Image 1 (cartoon, rainbow, N blue to C red):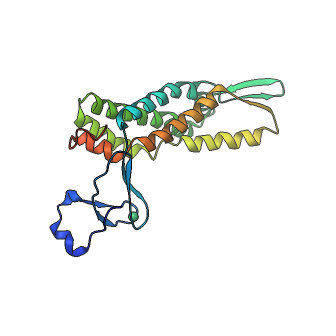
Image 2: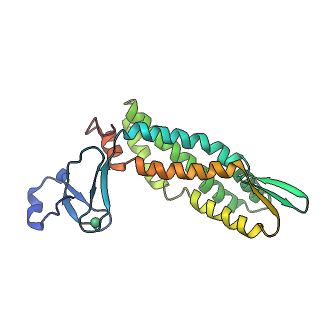
Image 3: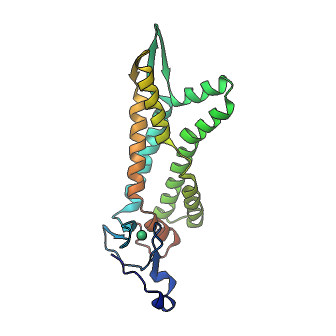
Length: 219
Ligand SMILES: [Zn+2]
């Protein structure tokens, strides 16, 4: 665990030797981490940063897996609904189109952006950032895109969409015959891969690798 800094020592320490906790603002001396070690805040236990092994390659594999699942998750049926002999396949995309056609253009735009637009843009930003580190090209664009990615994180709300689908399933299951489609499996897979990606793609290591301070940061 890193050492907290006494206020009297503060003036003598160079800024790059200090690190502040995001949660409780405690100021600490920056510890040097070996592979697979992580630094926790001694006051609140927040993970300050971790030094994970082979971050760029593992994250690239996860981003590609997520992109592969993105298309079936949005365009294959989430569920099949059979009501009084009428069967319908519902996909995320058909939901957006249905809202648009029934006069709710505003809501359909929000659903489109939060369930399809932002998640795709987030994945493409991550892909470009990782490729710029891996291939050592366009790091300044990589830095810009990684900043944009952090702003977009709050807008991709797949988990909220999944909650909506689950509520609809519970409500409709009494009224109609419901069966879950392949799209649902891909949708859940996409969510899980994205959570895994958040864990693997340690922001501290990505920032350091993008700024070129430490050429081995992304290893
Ligand atoms: Zn803290």
